[in-house]
Image (cartoon, rainbow, N blue to C red; front, side, top):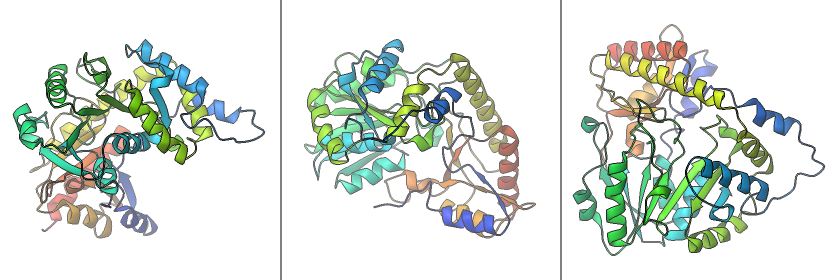
Length: 386
């Protein structure tokens, strides 16, 4: 099981804090945005005598309300075509293990969310990476490159849109190219659409559930963690119109009994969040993105594309090994009693030696903290020796 590039340096961060060092966490997508009051109040005011199991697919009231939410956003699904999961992570697991057997292959554009690799490894599924580059802003590689990787063992393609860790937003045209290859080879197309609301610069998000002809092929992963800044609730969702996939995923769902009851209360109530909340959050993330991209690109030797969505960026650093550098930042460096924590880039790749001079940053902190974090990084690069 590969270590998480997002969390593997946590012991070093904890040790730094014990030494009195202030650590700015750009390593993890944990927003400092307040969770909607309507969601928190639902838990505070819950009249519970017993904290019971729910249905293995999630509470019916929540699934009905969630289906209505998707319908309102132009995604026509029913409560029976979705399953509540323990975060988006479990939805990835259930989807992969329902559609692929041990030894089967899945194609994933890299850099990719590290858990895709972890869960594939746990299921003895072979990841066939197809590399996107920082020079193109991590756009989708040419369809011809996908074709080269397809074998009789290939069963699926996974994308994250908008992308974690790069922030790249796939266009509808790119998704239609993927649809073409998926239908040609009868593959599943997984789309992690957790960051759907976070699309910038006038761009819009296209769900694979709205691509005609993919009714039996499309599988979507979703979560309340980022949309409602409720990461700790651990509530996600698996969505597909393929009944066989849902029926198979139900076996996994029954084996783990049920998703968290308190988390489902949070998720269901969060669907009543006022639209003003999202407007404020949206503009805050644009401000943070513009700020961090400008400041990173102003550091000599650092390259940072302008992300089209989500709240991440993969950056190139003037170092030979970002794993060592990111650890050094926590173990041996501080600037005025402060340092910065980033996620080393190599953990987001499957191809050996890729991403060694890259890191992922998450602009989930307020601009004042981002300014100090990037100042720490700039000062660190002045004194760091490979």
